[in-house]
Image (spheres, one colour):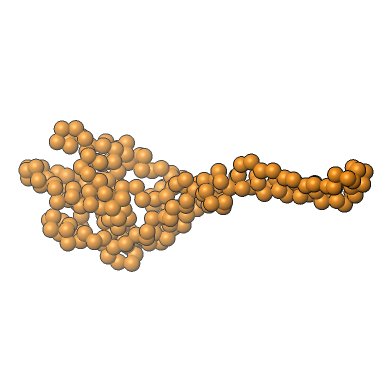
Length: 228
């Protein structure tokens, strides 16, 4: 941005006739004008593009180009209770994941389809999101995480408020739903929804260590992903 400042004195008056007060006023005018122009340039170049400082998260990290994304919506009761029953499963007494997969053997290519469709709907994924290779026969790391979630969350935990806890309760159509760039917001969400919103199948209280262990292991899903 270019700017100009003009401040004229009478050409008839010698330099010595300019009073110190007038000179100070002129210099102050120049300084203030330059400062305003610099601020305007910085504003035009800022990520927000509107002259305001982009919002930051609790630890100062910008999210999504300067816009803080809200945390995921709260956990809700699953809408797939009837679908699980239609697939031949008892939502209150689901089998271990390996036993579930074994139950599809010998049932033909469509035996697993009803349950797999529920996974895809809950997570917003296609088959290749969890499988690869010919006829989707090769499991991926994401498939291993699904197994862990099924065993540790769907089977062993319950919503304190009541209702069915299933994949769609948390994911609500998104494979990745937590905003990890906002640690403080994430911690508050987990405290509300996991620590205080869930209980074990036996009614025992849920805590951070239920999933993360003691000592605390943040990325425990990485362990699940590597499980064969």
